[in-house]
Amino acid sequence: MFDLGIKHGRIVGENRVDYANLYVKNGKFAGISSEDLAAKETVEADGRFVFPGGVDPHVHFNDPGLTDGEDFQTGSMAAVAGGITTVFEMPLTNPLTADKRSFVLKKNEADKKCVADFGLYLALTPDNWSRIDELMELQPIGFKAFMSYSPDIPMVKDGDLLSGMRAIRAANSRIAVHCENNDVITFLTDQIKQAGRNDPRAYIESRPDYSEWEAIQRAVNLAVVSGVQLHVVHSSTPEGARIVAEARSAGHPISVETAPHFLFLDSSDFERIGPFAQCNPPLRAPGNADKLWEAIRSGQIDCVGTDHAPYTLEEKLRGNGSVWETPAGMNNIQSAIPLLIGEGIKRKISVTRLADLYATAPARLFNIYPKKGAITIGGDADMFLFDAEEEWTVDKKQTFYKQKWTPFDGMKVTGRIKRTWVRGTLVYEDASPLGRIVVDPGFGQFIPGALRSS
Image (cartoon, rainbow, N blue to C red; front, top):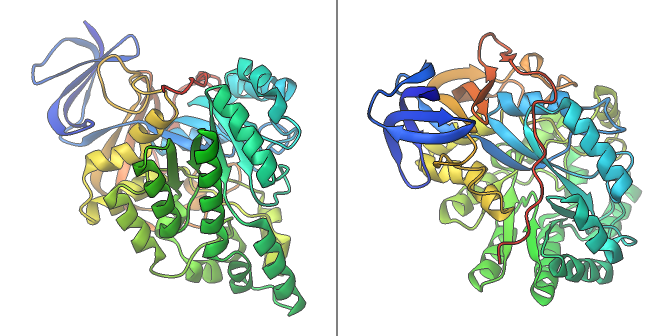
């Protein structure tokens, strides 16, 4: 007898959608069948979609040390309410996750609080690349580096980045890189500040699209030289996607993600919303999102990561007087997948491609497939039930975010997540305007970083 049966669902597989019953045993997908088989618990899908749970390669839950904005508990609750069952958490915390002590501290916090499964990045810094072998004992999901200034992590110059890439390649791991040209940004920012400008348009002009794709090209060049597996994070430009796609087609293990805010918001929204829509790289010109959707359709973009990066209301509101005074980042993880699927269907992108984008591709890239990322027999039974017809409106008050704000507040969405399971256990149900988390903090499990498959 199976533990769970999802009856009469449209099961979104890797290559097709089957109208069938889906069965789970011992936390694993155990069968897909048209037969009505015995199960201890059954759920009637009534023709709705059953999608694989999301694998988000890029979240900031701020734990430990910066938890006024978010922590593993609130962030992972929002994740599973949004269909994301596995998260990879970035190292920009206090202390910076750059050594054994800080990694163990963060893992202990996640073990106590997280309701989604999780992997953890380590920071690549100018002074730790020589200890990559030692750090690999911690089983990080990968390493994260910044090519531009950040208040939370030391930027790495090209020489240190190349050295780090070589060490990471030798350790058979992977690196994710924030690509922006620091010299260009510093030069333009100084010019704009001297002109007395502090408006949203000034911020966008200080970090133009070429400051991003030039850095992507440089990171790709260094990755080709070193042979490392490179993942370019939150690309906001079609040029960046094209650069990565060309390197990938030449046989190099290089991938790129974009983020929901670049697919649904633009510079006019920054001017309208203000500091709550401020991010790095910044929102681009109207029409840019359409180009990113086309890059998704063509396969140039590998996956979507939310880059969920919360700050307190007070921190963000500092930007009402000057964009130079507020931190860059936004809350978006709870609405990301419903928005992606709803808009993708409208744009006639197949649901199998959409599932690949937010689940299967990141699982493959980080070598945790088929355990995660797809509805496949023997894999972890991570999934969500999705009503593609239900319409709703994002309401910042009806979120699990610790800080009740999001630039998507008021956006209309077609398609709603009704239930989410992690390893065959129900973790979220859409039982009220907010919904309900039905497992205790600490249910989530650590996902050890797997070595490169090649």
